[in-house]
Each structure stands twice: as C-alpha cells, then as structure tokens.
Image (cartoon, rainbow, N blue to C red; front, side, top):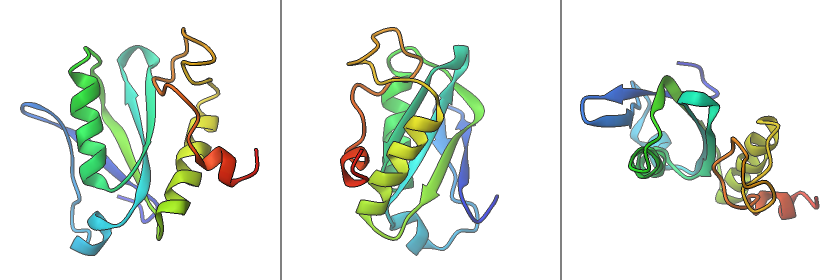
Length: 120
C-alpha cells in the first residue's frame, strides 16, 4: 500500500475496500477513488473508504464485476480537494461521462463538480 492511495480487494460477498494499517482518521477523511471493472469499465467517485465501498456494491449490483485490486482510494484533506481529485481521475481515464457519450467506458453520468472548481 502506497501513501498516495489504498487498494481495495474483493471480499467473499462482493468487493470491499480494506484500510490495512491506516489510522482510523485517514479512513474518515474525504478523498476520491477510481474503480476498475472487467471489460474496461471505470467509475470515479468522491468520499472516504466507506463511500467507495457503497459505490462498489451499488455498481456490482448493476452487473459489473470489480477487477481484483481495481479499487483505489486517494485521501484528501478537504471535500473540495476530493472533488478536484475525482475530476482529475475522470479525465485520466480518457473517457467522457455518459451524458456526453452514452457508450463511454466511464460509468459516471456527469463530470465531477471538481471541473468547475478548476475553472474548466
């Protein structure tokens, strides 16, 4: 596990992120995350590890299977920084949100509000 992010793992009843030896404070802070699914689908989100786990289960319930090690969480000091990181992760996928490209491999419906915060 790197200091920059935490990887999730696949649990017995679904995908569940692990905090490892990370202090409880880190798990409660904001952040952003990128989920990678089989067949190349991706989803970027904002929030703590607990929110990432909710997203994993929600998307898995739609029939997408998380790749092993396909959940990465990037802690941030503030919610604002989390929104910006979420947008950056979305851009790094090279895909557009579904409201622009309905066939996108990015499962997000719209750009993160971090786009507006960056003035883009």
